[in-house]
Length: 225
Image (cartoon, rainbow, N blue to C red; front, top):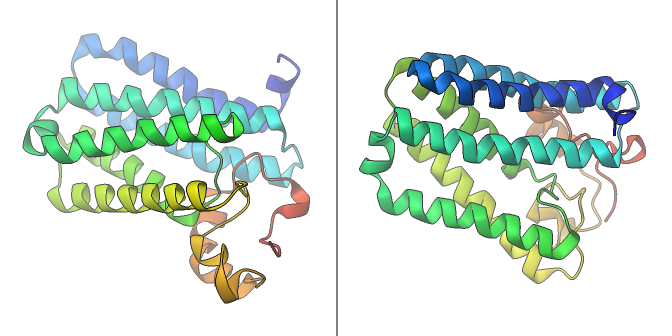
């Protein structure tokens, strides 16, 4: 493990874990702005670790699992911080939050049951969901209030992402960790190599959000399924 932590992308991922633990200690001050800044740093860590791993050719299985671990410690932590510091977000939408939290937990369980991993997809919708979650958290903690439009956008994209993942998990015998959209799972697009479409729909994530550190350099671009 120590050898893997010497790799730069894994050190960038470790920043996310360190910030998460620091923010838990910051609860004693009761200032939500600290959490907005901290989550912003975590967003940068999440963007950069995949980019650096690809550029330095340091993509590893450990890096993939470490990245997933950092995400799945940060997400429930952020939900708890939100409940403590901005409780009205939950009180205003109890049913929607209940559905979203159950969907998140079930996605973790199904992913682990299928391939012994919590995060197994490269779906564009999943990446967009993660980005909107970060933006909602940063905005809510820094401003001290939440924006209803951003909240519904975040929830809508998350639930759509969950449904896409659920359909793929139950309709396909094997999970393709490099599949970028349900569009390319069946039908006429199944054997299509969509570099132009990837440039349009996936460019934002390849440049700003990055590919997952688990993506080997020989499958960095979408290939035929």
